[in-house]
Amino acid sequence: MTTTQNSARPEQLRPRRASGPRQWRRWLASTLLAMLALVIGVPGAVAQPEDGVEGKTFVIGTDTTFAPFEFRQGGDLVGIDMDLLRAIAEEEGFNVEIRSLGFNAALQALSSNQVDGVIAGMSITDERKEVYDFSEPYFESGIQMAIERGNEDIKGYEDLKGKTVVAKTGSEGETFAKSIADEYGFEVKSLDQSATMYESVKAGTAVAVFDDYPVLAYGIAQGNGLKTVTEKEPAGSYGFAVNKGKNSALLAAFNDGLAKLKDSGEYDKILDSYLADPAASSSGGFFDLLKQSFPALMMGLKNTLVVTGISFVVAMALGLLFGFLKISRNIFARGLATGFINLFRGTPILVWAFFFYFGLAQLIGQSVNIWVAGVLTLSLNGAAYIAEIVRGGVQSVDPGQLEASRSLGLGYGKSMQKVVIPQAFKIMTPSLINQLIIMLKDSSLLLAIGFGELLYQGQQIYAANFRVTETLLIVAVIYLVAILALTKLANFADRRFNK
Image 1: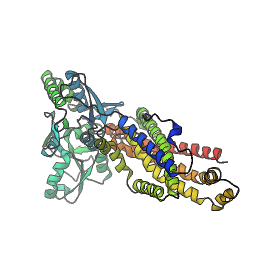
Image 2: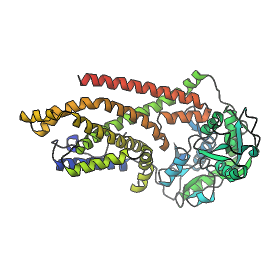
Image 3: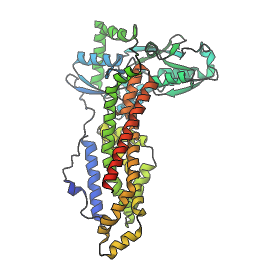
Image 4: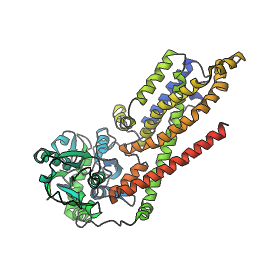
């Protein structure tokens, strides 16, 4: 996490006294300007000129869980899309920085200019052509229906009457399933990931899944517990997308490179390596899975702890500020604090994650670093709750304490500093520890914008091996251990400093 570009010294960013609305307003203004400088000053997607691509670097968004087109294997992002993109980039002489975001998040990132292009097994449709420019098709898809391996009751579409099926949001499978739903009398439920769709069928919450045939074939080869029961239905073509009217040089280079790969036979080699005979990955036992996934999960845990720690420090600073403003004698200060608290406590945290990463980029015309978006999301939401903890803690101190200190000749500021706040802090400590734990768990929501925290890494793992239950169990245990350790540490600090 980078520091702000504001060159002011720490003593210039806080008031000299605890009272005085003018000093507080100056402090607040300088803090907000520093935060804005942090957001604007962090580089993101690289703006590319239209005079060629050689030697340039392009940021490309992709899905996270769409094997065999994109998935992680041994920590590396691989698949048909990834191999094609890298081969084309090498052929055409440009570089790519790939961001694994999830399908919907990748499209939002493209629309907000956080990425230069998207390759994610995306079908070329007339509706999408109105928003994006597409390359020449690089894959002709098809849809199949699959059911649980031991199910002998479902043999075709006619057996789906009155039942629920699942399909991936925004996919050709979803479009096809909905197109025949009324004819065969079934309901379509849309989910975001292939792995969770397959688990839904095995759990009995749906009887069948509609998905792209290569994705189903790969999943079945990996032991996802399903079997196909229908022939392949014609579907759309996959294409590489850029924003309409932008990055035309990148689009042209992709088309040129794709044509060269087809002429050289490299294109067929890439497809055959994933589709000709999908090899099952080594399943192994639970401890084999733990050993294989441990490095990636530890990286995710590190990111979770770091973003939580940074966010909690920022949340404490803002929470103290708005907490004291909430009990200020100044009506405008109280109004500002009330508005801040109501805004961030009254709206879902996920809304702010999308706003800070996608929406803010469009508003300011600059890319927003994902760490900045994550810290802003967690810290501002946490600050709203900490402000109320501070207000409650200060107001719970017996008013006689303040009166007694004033009667001894101490001013209001000194009385608050020496008498009231130390007692209030002891009262607040358990609630602050609880808020820290809540922020650590809330960090898992950042996976929606592609932040590489612990649960995100877990998704990457089960997207490739389809061992969803075991992977999530490991993730849950790691969360539990981390939270228990953090609670012990916080309680130790509480006993040490609040004797």
